[in-house]
Each structure stands twice: as structure tokens, then as C-alpha cells.
Figure 1 (cartoon, rainbow, N blue to C red):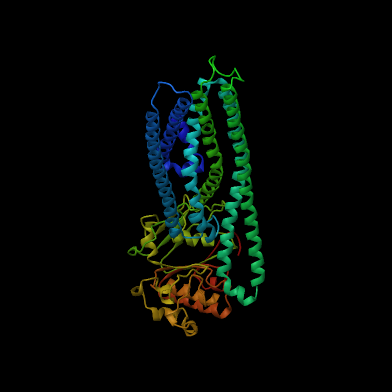
Figure 2 (cartoon, helix red, strand yellow):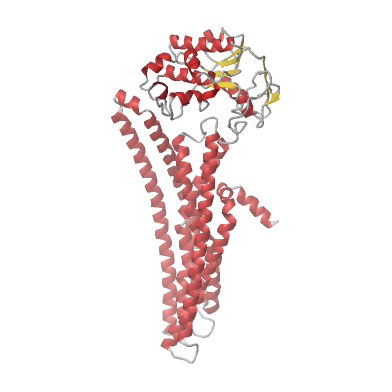
Length: 556
């Protein structure tokens, strides 16, 4: 019962949940580190007996036997350290690699941007920040287990030989974890702020790079540089705050440990000189026992010092774990299907939707759209127009929603086959870092007629302005295309494969009248050939030409 409750308690913490796959391996490696530390206690006894024998020759153990034992134990200790280091490093790097691969796979499969932030924040989380977990696993966890075992063993041995030494260690030792806990609160807060600032800094950098042509055209370079310099200076100050906490904690902890070792040394020295006659259990300290206590005293504090030194590793890992858990919550499976090419779903493209409740609490109207119908979804911003389109495409899920397409329930098994029959025209342009041809046919040149598609989307004039025509590489931001030209490329992509259903999100938004008319004409031409057309729009001129208008969230 106790182990189960401890497991549930640990798994309620983000960091414990993340490290769970590597926990067993790290714990085994940590026990090897503990065993290596305990071997040093035996080595310390051999050293103490050896030097005591040199000071007061006796007929005891031969010196070469003591030296051989010390060397043998040293080899065993070095071997344990090597094996434990290999184990903990391998488990930590494998855990980080698995987390990173999961992030990459999730981001590749996402149907929309991450709720964590921009591409820069997600990128730095998956690269630099995840690596923060490695020192936490390799340094903090072994140090934590050593603190639980080694100081206790040394404390018992110290009390066994001299209660005064044990009392010194007992008083000085707890001051370190108490102060470490106090510092830890400030360290975690400072680390969390630094991690957030690193993510926002990368977001800012990505945004500035994407807007670089506009920045140069407007001559806004100096102002952008000033803003970026201010952000960089803020990050520098936050980083220095983290370092200040680390230096302050290490300074105070070194003071405590130095005082503790010094007090032990003073007691042992004056006891051997017969100046102090108390503190032992009746018999005076022998040189062997005195040197043994002196050799053990630093190792009583060493695990505590190592844990304190690694405490900021835990603070940084806690901050990263919180951020990763927040990313996972926003990256929950929000779309159906695997996002792969599939054979088109058979049957007439009848579309039905019932029982959709938005996360905000709003209830969307039920839909029953016959094949070949044209429908306009109108309403104020935030009413749910885009949500309806994403739900119908299987790009978003809402608990309790019942959606059927072509006579089948839209779910993980049917979504890819359904998407093979639809054309998707989002509001925000997204391009491949490839040629215009590839951005239209999406690697399926046999799925449609590229010449007819260019003609229907009125892309002929656009081709005349591109240096290499269809072979012109656009880049991920669609460099060289205006807003209206980019929207026509999206239209061409949506209609290239002659889909049975076209879902268009604000196809004429922010366009000049001439371009809006061209896109409207192209969409109506697709409806004329028999395609089902569902459009989310604020453009009442476009909506008036649809068979039905469905109003969401009140009047448009």
C-alpha cells in the first residue's frame, strides 16, 4: 500500500511523470554510486590504520596488505563509478531522445499551431530545454540517493567512535538541506522565468526572420534591432539572476561544511593531544580512530554539497517539465486519422453534424448538407465558423460531437479516406519550401490537371511574374507572392484533385474586389460541376450566392 501511494504521489508531479520511463535504470545506477561511496569508508579505515601503524609500529596488519586492500577497493570503486555513469547517461539520453521524437511526431501531425507559443518556443523546448533533463537525471538523482544513505552511515560510525564528532555532524548537517530548500524556491522561480524568456526570445527571432523583407522595405531595421536588444538584455538579467541564486547557495553551503569539518578536526587534534578528554565513550581516541573520523567528515558533507550543487539542475528540470506538460495538454490528439494518403471513401458525400458544444460553452447548430449543396457559414469572429470546417475535415475533435460523412461516422479509422475526397482552403496561407508546382499538387501530379487548375484559379498572371514559373521555389512564407496571389495558390491546391467537397475558410477576406471576384467565380465553378461547397465567410456578397446561409453566434 505504501509503495502504491508513493507512486501515485510521484506521478502527480510533472517531473516525476516525465522521468518515469528512466526511473528504474537511474535508480540502479544511483545505487551503484552509493555503493562506491560506501567503499570509500572502508578505504578510509585502511588509510587510517596504515598511517597509525607508521606512527606507532605494531605487530598488526602488514602495511603492504593495507595498501593492496586500498588499491583493490579503489579499482572496484572506479569500476562501479564507470558502470553507473554509463548507465545513467544512457538512460538520460534515451529518455530525452524519446521525448524529443514524440514532440517532433506530434508537431508534424498537428493540424494547427501549438498552444504553447510560436515555432521558436516549441523548437527551443524540443532542443535546448529538453537537454536540461540530462544533468537532473545524471547529477541530482544519484546525489539525492547518496544523501539518503551515506551521511547516515557516517553519522552512525561517528557516534560509535566519538559522540562529540557525531553531535557536530548532526548539528551542521541538517542546516544544508534546510537552506537548500529555502534557496530552491527562489531557484525554481528564477529558472522558470528564464525558460519562458528563452522561448519568447526564439519566437521573436522567428517572427523577425519571417518579416525580414517587410522590415527592410520599410526601413525599420534600427527599431527592430533596438527591440531585440532589449529582449536580449532582459534574458541576460534573468540568466544572471539564476546564476546569482546558484552562487549564493553554494557559498553558504560551503561555509557550513567547512565549519563542520574544521570542528571535527579541532576535536580530534586536541583529543589526540589529551587537551580534550571528553567526547568519546570512555577510552581516549586512538590515532587510527582519529584519522578515520577526519577522513570521514568531508564525505559526510560531500553528498549534501553535491545535492546542493545539483539543486539548480532540479529547479531547471522542474521548469522544463511544467512547460512540457503544458505543451502536452495543448497537443492532445485534436484530429482524427493518421494524416496519410488513403483511398477515397466511397458513397455520396452527405455531411451531417450534431451535438457540437464549443469549449467556450456555445452550442453549434446541427448540419445536414446534401451532396452538391452550397452553404455559407456566417457570423461574428469567434462564433465557431472555422471550428465547424475543422470538425467536418476531421482536423479537430470536440467531446460528444456526432459527425457522419458519406454514410460513415467520422473517426480515426475513416478520417484519412474522407480527407481524400475534400479540398481544404484555410484562411492563413501555409506553403512548402518547394516549387509552386509542388505546393499545388502536393506531390500527387497524377491526381489532377495542373493546367486546368491554374486556369480556374486565375494563376496565369502570377506565373508570368515568377522567374521560373511553376518551378519557382516559394519558401515556407510564400516569398514573392502577395496576399491575394497566395490565396489563389491555396485555391488551386484545394481544387487540383477535383474534390467532392470543398471547405473554404474566409476565402475572400482582406482581398481587393477584383481578386475576391476571381476566387468567388472559381468556387462557384466547382459547385457547378457538382462539388459540395461549404464556406465560412464575412463576405455577404459571397454568402448570398450560396444555396443556404447558416448564421452562427447571432447576426453577422
